[in-house]
Length: 301
Image (spheres, rainbow, N blue to C red):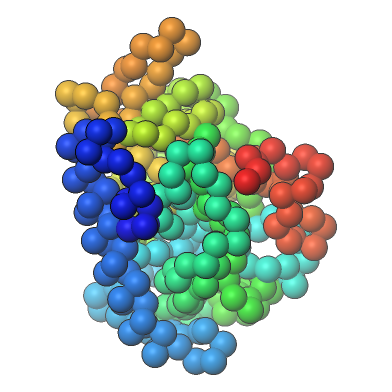
């Protein structure tokens, strides 16, 4: 991420607010990489460990149907069920900005990166933690999404550890649908709200997203990447990615909706989620991610 930051010509292209935001995240990236080196020492040869100190005290009690909720450093995520067999690889989805802010126009595929991911087992009620080394896909162009494969793990092996994947829907939510946003950032949290709008064009800083969903589910720092789940089907229909925290101008943490005439509108206090149904059609019958699947509509590198 710091390499990306240095590659930007920020002196002429970015606002002060965006510069400050990226400098902060650059510092956080350095912290994450350093902490990862220490974290590696606590892992066995399989990359699996049960108890690094990520939650103060005991981990939260998480119902089995939400045990796929994941915690990353500074973000959230979720283990997804794409309909493959028990031997299918274990994939977590989160936001692209949670894995290093892919620059506008860039799509990352098979990118090396250490990511610490934690779940809570629904059977042992202990932490189940992993250190991954590869991002299968990430972008902030058109959407804000990343796909991370857990090393040497399958949907079946995680189920034995009490971590159950949540199904990924092949269709997005409709206007006024009731949805649930859930996370385990600092305890098990679940909120209900409705899809208030389907936004054709959302802009946040230099990034542009299409087909976003405006919602009003409670969120806070660290919940980026948390799943938006259909209250009716129980399937993931989107992932939360940003909230509007000011009302004076568009920018980072102040995403604006852009209409067909180019007019920007800022809705202070509102939240947005990005579509995931594009991703749902990008897995083969064995549950393996494959951008060449016939119905896969994700942007290609």
